[in-house]
Length: 377
Image 1 (tube, rainbow, N blue to C red):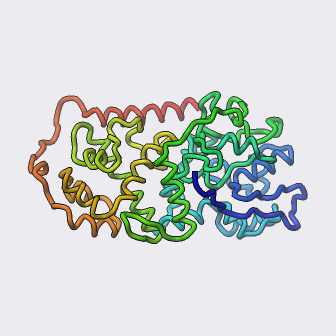
Image 2: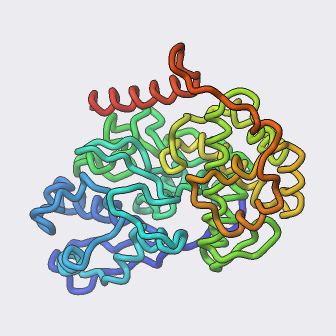
Image 3: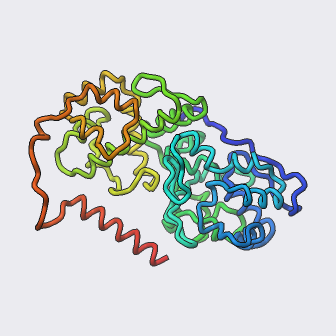
């Protein structure tokens, strides 16, 4: 399965205000650490965080995106854990290494799974390996389980779960109370998450995961036969997710689908991927298929990809839409692609009446189902 990388070293509290504060474990998420602290103190997680930040509803946000200076100071004083250790256990540092653009706090961060928080409920975004939790002396959630490119456990060669295996609910450990024992428990049905069945991972998806980890740790990686800095590497990979979405959305025969089939051997329109969702909102299984396709693109030599573009008849406009920010590496590549093809000469008249296309109906239905699920919760 490849090398298992370390993301932070953890930290032991020094002169904490709360004497029973547990150590921050290596690679542990801040939210996981605070949940364990609440259980040790015998209190509700909300009550614990209200003592630290009286005016901040911590669990209604994404608790692992990091803190401003004032909130960070409050947590340092209560826990005895240093600022550097706390920041290393947040997702902000990772986000800053994979993308150069600013990261709006209330918007999706590229390559970071979205929790879909609304009040006390979540739609997903947290994963776990049941075997890791089962082997932990102290069960805890890892930082890398929030990375969108992580779909499998490289140590145990199994798929990460993003829902309770028993009731199918998204993981909401902030709902737990001390009586639940530890955080390896479903916040809804109280099932033991360590009992979840193991499943294999798509080979190309785990290959991409390992390649992305290596790129992030070394600061550079190979893409289209060339070496690129980590932000450029991740930018190209994210650009390819847009190609997959456009090919899926088109429905029916189109040049983008032909290109993806030629490069990866997979037809995006036949894959069980939920349409209308960004990579960061997809389920683990859906992301495995997307990452498998991306991996084939990233490993392909530049000249071979140009040849595939020409062979399948993809135009420069279809490959690099005007409304999409095209990575510099792709702009250079697209210069060798014809600006138009014979398919572009066909003018489609705007639809005024009649039924909507299938992809629009599916997207609207999925949006409605997500809304109904939130209201039921």
